[in-house]
Length: 380
Image 1 (cartoon, rainbow, N blue to C red):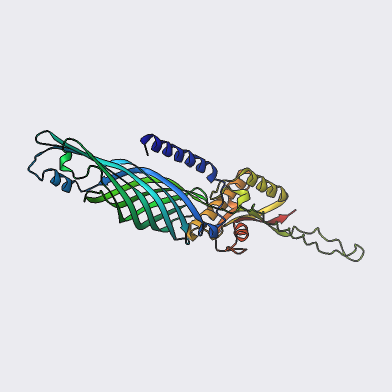
Image 2: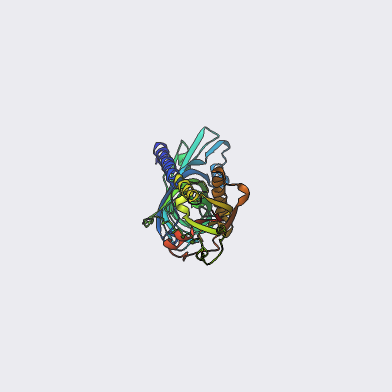
């Protein structure tokens, strides 16, 4: 692959990244069963660096009594890889792919104006086992170990070609490879990877070394199920006020008017209807829902308002608790901005500890992602 083509591939990946970032905010992680067993495809591009036993090469150039007057090595190029993989579960996957690590060369000159230049390129196929460790819902670290079957193509030129038995040798060898990296999920289907890999290689003339590939790329999981629309939780009706019975005026003396009766009203909102995914910023629709709640409690002497955030079980318990508390606090801030006394509004974050449905299904998880607002006061 020429440098122009490689630059074009890098540009295409950059465009895909911007498109992924633009759609990530509205994406919802509701299909973990699919994501942990899906097939996926991907591609990476980056810089490769070779280390192909220069000491042994210099020794061969000076083997017949010649003195080395100059030796320079070009050990950097652009490399890429394309791959297909299968998630075995949340923590392990298997990947098979094709790679091109680029070309690496040297230029040398010895006494009696002898020059010898060489270039070696490496491309082939690999099979890896990938181990993944989720850090949060979007971030994970991973490591890989496997084998690479690489073809090394070497070419020599210069006026010392008499010292080379074959000016264009090639060789295929099976060697080990390993690597590690980070992954960021834009959505359940699209992710960005950055990784470092080391390929063990042979250069077709008896030299052995390593090629390191520092790359970034995109991974796309195939066959994602359509996301179901979130359903707002039903609003619990307010209990009817209790009115004491009054005997006829002729039978009893006049009775003072009934005193206001304590009333509690509780409303539940779907988290997706109120907030963007993985965010505590109120959407316009969420503000409208809270405005509607405030209109319903007009005429009530409010004693306490309690906002409680809840999440599903995806992600760590600590992260979910913090997210639920942030959402409760965001609701409080909006209520205060509408004139509610801040000292009367309390917030709680229950995280994933109080599910109302089964977290094993998408519908159950949607019901568990909720915010409740309870108003306690006296109706006039």
